[in-house]
Length: 187
Image (cartoon, rainbow, N blue to C red; front, side, top):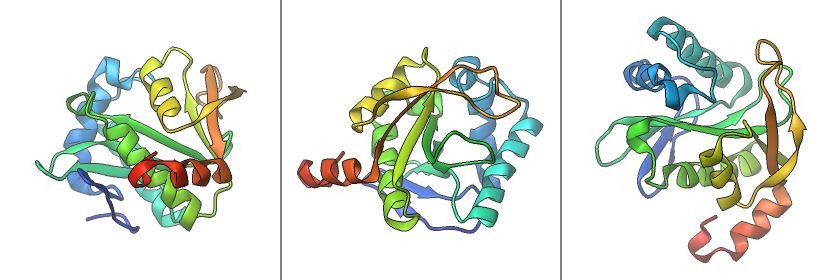
């Protein structure tokens, strides 16, 4: 079963709300110490299921949540990306986390571009942020590639209130201007 919500497509990816069939890939991501380091830390399969159910619940309650990324060529779950704003969050976030098998392929930029467009066009978000641990160099590079800049230090709500984060982001107008200037509509 798939959570309610739209399906987006890019050249190489299908972005859709989480489905029960995503659990294996999601559990592999969260079991990997390096991959899970900046997204809550390693989790067991049952903890990961609850995290995935939270994302699905966000779709049902809010009409948005992180999309599951499915690689078109293989049908494999390769990550999660998209709009995220639980209670107490420091802004309207578009975030990303990729399975290690998807690292280095440009999927984060490709998928984030599609979800930033969707957040601006369909959710009407006027400010887009990314909550990034200052030590997470790969995510900082993704943020820079999509035109986001460091905005300020921030805090997450409990139970992550002690995690140091930096807010990166841009306004919807800045995003639209960047997209209009980009060749072939790329970020």
